[in-house]
Length: 287
Image (cartoon, rainbow, N blue to C red; front, side, top):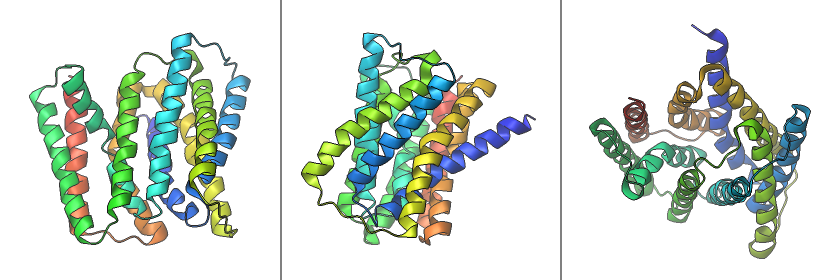
């Protein structure tokens, strides 16, 4: 067993899953789009600086620049922007569960619009994932979850799924960290005017805001990215992607432990069904 790879994988998925909880804390004290704009500015500059230290250069083709802008707007701008705004009204665990649908959504869109063949196991996985989401949505909505927040979270994961499909093959494998940093800077430039236009700025200074902001900027924003690249280089993209199966469970568990969010039996069942659906889709596509 590769103990180092196991440690890297578990560290990544914990950091990635915890981002929803830290965001939930931060938006209670600061306007969400303003928060994200500043976060992306700092994270982007740090990522670009680290990339330069590692010898990466800003040497992209026109297509790759297009992918940087498109992915920066859709993934960082719309996806995270919608999620941060949504978490003013919905819990971090619910946002994490909705975000975990990404592999299922990408597989479904590829099947419907790009006519990619999906084996029977993959089709079963898609329907299982949908069933898991319906179980959780029924429980949360009947329990009073805000429909606006839920719709924003779905809008966010839809934008991320669309971005994933549109920029396939347009990344620069030798400049990955540089590309990620540039995408963050694109998002910062887009979110700041949006914040000016649509938000009444408020910042309630507290230690909770400072800790949550520093954490979400440095840990999910920069450190998790570095760990992910190291993991992919060590064990390959397919094996590394399997760690994402833990995201639904950990996203809910971390929110429950850190901010005391409740977990119902329907949540547990729904998360298990979604996770099994993701595993079925990914396994069917790798065979």
